[in-house]
Image (cartoon, rainbow, N blue to C red; front, side, top):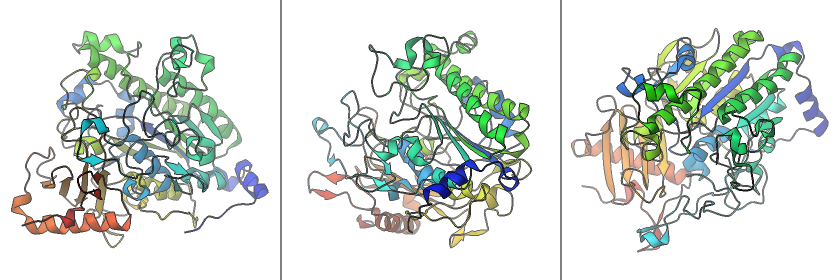
Length: 530
């Protein structure tokens, strides 16, 4: 593919000419993205039943949306934030972008502000694997930055087609000092609080969201000075700013794209005082109450935006896409409860390629167009690139990068089902790849670090790079991934190993380096199998 640049005058004209009748017919789009949000952290039924944990949360707005939306029961993300967010922006699988863990706050610094590791093993740990040569500088919009992938951003295509593009909240596509850090470079006309940071140092307006001399780090949230010294929780402040930003395109009749990217419910797990006491009174422990209060704050944000659309008379022409950027955090004790159980019946959580780390809440609502109810077609974050552009009526676009995602519009509108063809196979049988060739945490890492997986139909192959073990699960019969049936299906294991390895080679995917040999960890089809 190649890059196609609009002349400056033409580009400005397309951005500013949103009042025409043809432009006004296009649907508005709100992409509502929640951080570290688990599959069972609401009252919305994504699975075959409403699981026990779901009864803890008060989420009336999500449930209200679910009553009219297409619910993606097999909706997936990457296992960590930046890989998902860059896949959304590029249309590429994270193994293809080589952005396979989260980026640091500063360019060319693959360590975090506290000196911890990001995406590779600390030498002091004595692990057999050393850091791989991944793209730790994220996505870029121009050449010149090593360890990055140069792309045509999806939002830039929307903007150049006449959409009023608004970014609110967390960005996290690349470190400071890179073009991927700044939402304006991605094609946004408005940016509120988006930068290099992957989580907020503080959710509290009383603390200026950590934008003060005592607390400041790169994770201090910028651009919200009007709320400093107030009791405005960060989730609420971002929602208020989103509504302000929407006033202009609604007033002029220009179609808008709002990327409502909440920092919640990422750590630090912080009590939203508007809702916290309710959960204490209902018997939650302190950690559970803090987390549930954050979830309800995000739910209120969604409800407030839906109410705002109705008040302004644009609800019937506004698409809402609801999604999480990875599975719920299942290790951090600050969430309360019992670690490793928060996503049950799904196994594990954030950073793992088991279902708890990658299967996420996901809904589409396109008034008058989307099917209502559950859709079992598997979907990936890279699918959002062609899907959103199709919804927006953006055709015949050119991109630098090749696109891995598939347009989901036929699926969510009922024109295509699981057995219909797509990309040389069927929707139900297409192969989904999840790649985590890194260490995420020092502790509790057995079911998290150095793993990759492929799903085809009900079958999922998991490759543990540390041990060379291959596991096979039938997700239709064993959603919790507890019954490894690899020994019973050796031919299927070989077939999936071959398919996964072919994708890894095609994408030149990164693998960790074995310190003992100084060679990359073998691909699955390079293992000795019986």
